[in-house]
Image: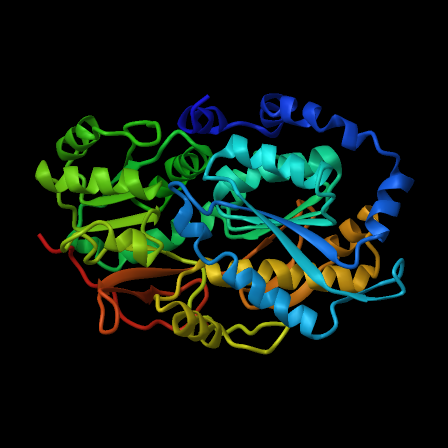
Length: 434
């Protein structure tokens, strides 16, 4: 079966459907699952380290999200291990953390299969996962199935909740409900110069389904007319029907939540077919410098998006005291590339893991799970405290891509009404270049 076909199978699936579709992988590893618990503990006790599993989209259309691994992961783990590691009562000493990272290839079905192997074959002690519902939801589904404590981040909460209810998985990110307020806040600054008609590009995936549902409800309440032509598959080659409808409805503002290749196709076709809105606010596809640069020419100029983390976020590492800016500067120094938003969330995942393990002082799965549940800490992405639905909301602001001084395109923070302690770096540039 091709990777692209498997990817389509994973789009929009519930946890139960993911488990059905990955049952073969679980059955193939079933012998490992049959090992008695005392034998599993005995095997774990022979290890001289704590093993954390990390499914990551290192390749494929979500690779921009996975780019900062393993760098950010290893920065956090290095800080933990330089302190001697984590004290585990079963071992009677501190032991270091080791990472087992696997590439999901941005494929939900592969993410689930690899997670099963990490749990049943590699015998990981804890799972840390992030980067969109296509990665997070199938991984969390497998962790729920096999009762594996899991820390997840970086998937909008509404899309994550579709896989619940959760007992073993704990999540940190923002809500689409919040991002809608932020998008509308950026548009409202120039509302008197637009007709407040918004056209949406939302694919047939967990993000697209969750985002479009919220936008249908909230945008009319906020005074905007929402034009939604419907869902489309990944790697769509022709958006003519969307563009024709947007032109007919006199759309002034474009929005959406789609993978970078699809936005590149849609945005270029908009220009080719004479649809240049006054504002374009695009989630997911316009988050990272590499994806924005890939649009080419002047096409990135003025695009707006959500910003979940940046050098200007006033947070520090619980492990080293490093600021967000210091971590970004270190990335740029070592990698020669501009900062990217997932750096902070990758790092924070291991901050949360270290904090929970230190309090649990054991690798007993139930006790580790309970320690994660009682998390109440400051991290480099903000404060983390899980609610009764197992998620913690993280702060969000609005950003805009402009021509840069150091890099071809740089992301300025232009809207912070919901979180004014995150300082703006510029004002919104309006309208988009025609």
